[in-house]
Length: 518
Image (cartoon, rainbow, N blue to C red; front, side, top):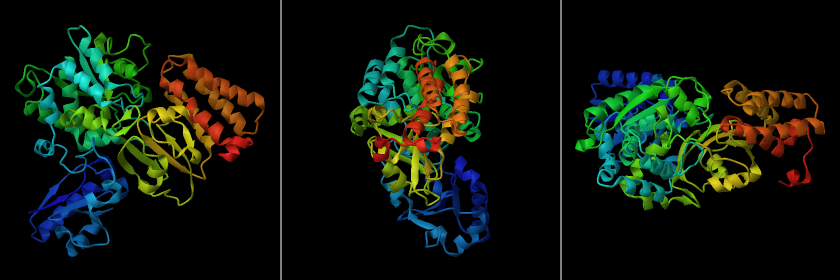
């Protein structure tokens, strides 16, 4: 029997993967061929989707950008035996885009049936949990600290410190909450985990529960991810049936139950305290800190809040050891990060690499340059609140501290590439507009500052480039950074100031000698 893999990830579905799978099944039946269709997750090479793979003795042969009407011709060419065709990309594992990555968290992505526990365990799944069940909770927290894993949601706070704090807290109930409210522009790594390898997220949350004494977990998924929600619910049901969840985790005295919560459609609910408010059934507005959620979190109880990639990385750390993971990366940025290459780029997709890679490598070695063929001009790193980096900064190693030195953020690892037709003043104005419509409204700097910021940039773009307006804009940004309750208002000035500093000509301003030199 020949196995043919057709992805079931949202990106592939949007490009007709279901129709392709149906066409493959129908064509194989017509020809009397013994074919098994496996709906795998995506490899993250979105520029090749739908990427159909055929299992052969020499590896899985890929056929890119397949449409339903291509299927008959593919069978005519013998693609079910891995034969040559113009859509063939050869052995998928040998594609440089994939082969040159360092896939630790994403090692199984696109290889397995996302809902097959057998596939998951056959490729190393559950080993981390089994190891943790033989450890003391304090030792688990110390090992996580030793690994160097920091929160992958953007704040980069050491995960082990959160876990230790919750473990040490005295309470009759503790919670593990996964922030899957992935709302940043150009990001999709969380979705890929949930749709392509949900069991590693489930395993990571169980490990967090065992380590901290938490017995309940919630995955808060943005409402725009219906496929993720469906896949997670089905995976949780199967994990429960397999004895991973419930009153006895894998037959031990540890209890852990897990649920999926559908998000409320607000960008600010990606902020951890607003998420907790929403999870409790309230309006998603930011809480003042302290107290921190690790002590007073969901329903006032100690709560670990980590994002999807943080929790999904936990199993490989405990399967292979803290030192194994720590050996990747640079400085205080240890391990790998799934960089999401998007925007005006030829080869968009997910690239997991150790910290230290540069934007230039990601844009050209992996992304293949712009889709338009025009010169790349700016890259926004870290979502809609991230800075715009000019070419002079594309060789800075992607590392939390190195980026902080130039006022930039790595964030969730999302990159949005712009070519030389982009107007950075227009993009800066949109950043303020985005904040104005997405602000929860609780604090004045964010609520009012974003509205005034949009107005000031509009005046500048209309020709009022006086010192008064530029000074007003910069002072407004300083106020938002210093006075906002959360990153919504505190980071909105980042794209604005970076655009103003590096691309003054788009605001009708002259470049300084230093800017000309850069």
